[in-house]
Length: 468
Image (cartoon, rainbow, N blue to C red):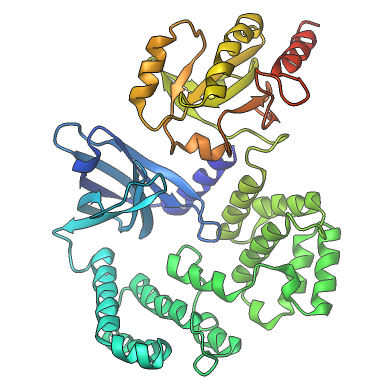
């Protein structure tokens, strides 16, 4: 529900009088595989929401993705264990080549893909950004000897003068922000105190004169670097008021306390950073976790700014995701030509298992699960997910084990479900109640644990209660 709400809020933010951006893609390295498109729900948490998906044609390697937007947005394309970021402008068609980077080592970690645009218009944001980035790279290369002798900081100052002069007449507000905060982020990295500005100087140059751009990636990268995410970073007097605000579960009281700091005069920044700091405080022993969550819930409902509400929603989702006592992440998977939806499994408990065919404990547990299925399938819905890297090994496993009677679905290693349920090891088990709330994560396994207990003890209790 949390993800669904965030996505709906995002659509409301983007899709008023919107125009389609269409990607006509070519990805020969990924023929027959799915390519997904995500955007960032907010740039405080960098939570991603899927906004498109397509199959790369098995024959010619082409694909097409589209999304309706009224403004420039940053999207993440992902295929296999690769991804790449580009911008999408409204009412724009893109011809894109998506490929594995050259000399990419074999790895299970997510790797950056290489993207090439064809016939990109010079007014498009991608054209401008790529041209600017290439200019900066060339500048650093030309100045490499000076950088070796005197460090990077003087060259950042020189490049800043060149860039501001080159784009003095630029009318594209989004691109102007990109250049300004690209340079601002470089300046924040200055190591030498000889070249580093005071915090107030950064504030007066980059924050105070300009409107808040909460849905701009470069701007938010600077803001997150400028402001601490720690509630203990304030003066002692303000900090005591912050403690009282959390004690009384009052976001408005916390906003008033933070307003006394001169760097928090802008309401939207103050509300955003309040959300960020509350999220960071959730696991700190000095603060009551329930109070933090109540405050974040309140911000979701009553935030003055949409950016803060989205960020609070995403932080709550991340803090409570896959924890016992909280709603289970929704999922939809395909099984034997039909869709299996968690939302349609609420008449029974749901027992989810994640396994791999190479794992002997997993294989033994599946054998035991067949007996549990026969005994308790009237009360519990069983579903198993295979996390093998290659689907061929999964297909061979099914042929060798035709007697398993419950849905067994192939996921692979990088599926969203694995991340959403925070599957930390294999095998892994989760029990969800009839209301879609996670009852146990991790849940017991079919085989005995160190205390000689199995999930069957729980199933017996469920059967007893449901038979009353």
